[in-house]
Length: 241
Image (cartoon, rainbow, N blue to C red; front, side, top):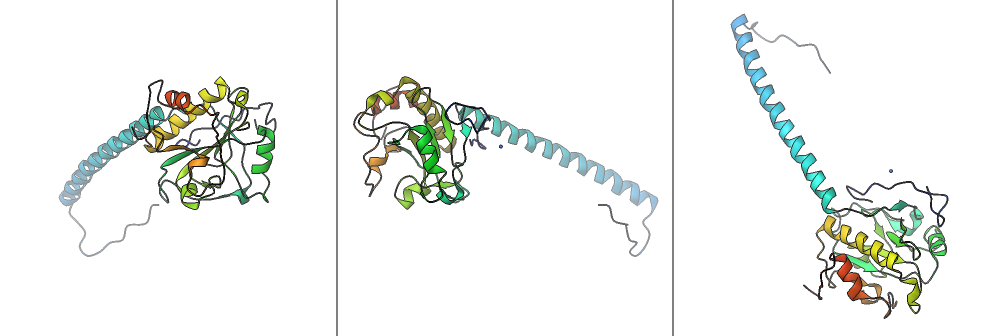
């Protein structure tokens, strides 16, 4: 996922049945070196090579340890790769090109299959990085985290955020199931851990809170207190804390 990127298990799901990641001759220049000089230089080169090998081994071990720490910190839930149309997002190299500072929470106003069709329709010019299903918390990933999904209606926020859609309607709380909350919160926590995003309401926001947004999702029935407790592993969190 995307996380470098979490690995995506090609698992089939009822919602998405189609989608189950020289040697060169040495030239003589000037005088031929003596045997003693050759032995001395050979010993020096051997010592230098040993030192370089040790340094390389240390660097490789440190790099592997760092990768393991990052993977442990960003323990992504299972996600399933369902690519959006390449016309519906912008290829990028985040967080090098732009920092990732926000997670934007959306509600689809569509079923999962219908929202998936929208993301795969090149005429729609819209996408999100992830979508979470209501019934069982299934997570589809439509855009790589390094790329810019078009979900927030604000170019700056698109550049600097991860968009997570949730199957359902803002005026019908029954779509916001226990499985959805738990799965989405685990995903949000992993994204926060990966990019160092604070797990608070200044950085985990609704689409309605994006400057200039004309959307109201996730709406008043979305339980922010519950969601943020889950993101923070059960601890209570306030805005800006």
